[in-house]
Length: 407
Image (cartoon, rainbow, N blue to C red; front, side, top):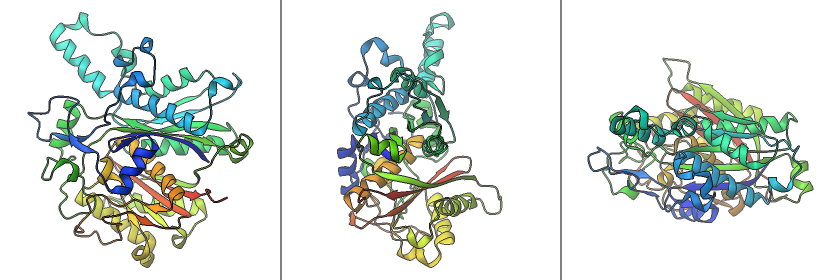
């Protein structure tokens, strides 16, 4: 059960701002401000606006030395715990509280800055904090260390599915009886000079054919590529008995999950087909019971069309009646945070009885012929949703979530 959520995204910080933007179809993509991108091929990205780590942690922790994704992950954790009405400091010190965080690009800002120091100041003047702050597990470790209870910190790195995979791992620990409550999610902060340049060189982020706010265009004929973004989405998970015992609100239940690699060279996206089939089987649900599909939809023409093809394989004729929307028109692609942000958007869609539109989707691209909920949000009685996430390297994850708000 998801009982608390925290979000920092390009289109809004906090649940209210995030949801308001999604429903309005407003994009958080804008000019890059985190560094001087004047000489870069692309000068746009999805940045978290107005973020100050000192709003979430004391100065003595030296947050400015931390990687930005670590700062974002910790801030989102504080939001999620507050939303859940759960304070670990008031619990028994023996409480086991697993922390599972997904990270894709890790601390590239720290690494790039450290290399600059090496080049300019020499090897004897590099900041010693680079060692600890650039570790892949830094975000999960910081969260675990500051909770004040017994924890098991785990870091998952599986490209864009990292965050949703981390949530699935935390849910599995609760289902196995290893814990009653857990913290999980994902964070990435790839808006750095080297990362942006490499994504642009690989054709993986938009070079700005449209105004920044209209550049991320899932399933749209005007799309040439997705848009790189940063963000964090963290949730609090509990078993039902624990949640009810403390009177917690429940946003949704995770009932199915699967992760598969693309393993057929002649059918390069078939792993996504298998994750959808297996997650539905895991949830004991049929395609007719899915009311909404929160898609991967990065805005890359090839990847968008491939996902549509896999959806049609799984859903058959039901695909023509299935609302499918991608939130990346509003958020861009925040890599490991993508899946958690999708889950949070599903929880809010359940709560408000509203499917968020695919922002900036106007004219369907070739091979993209589903109901993408264009232009405006749609009222809908939602009970069950499917989430798709895909990553570089051919990793795929799907998750089935169900609405418990009316119980």
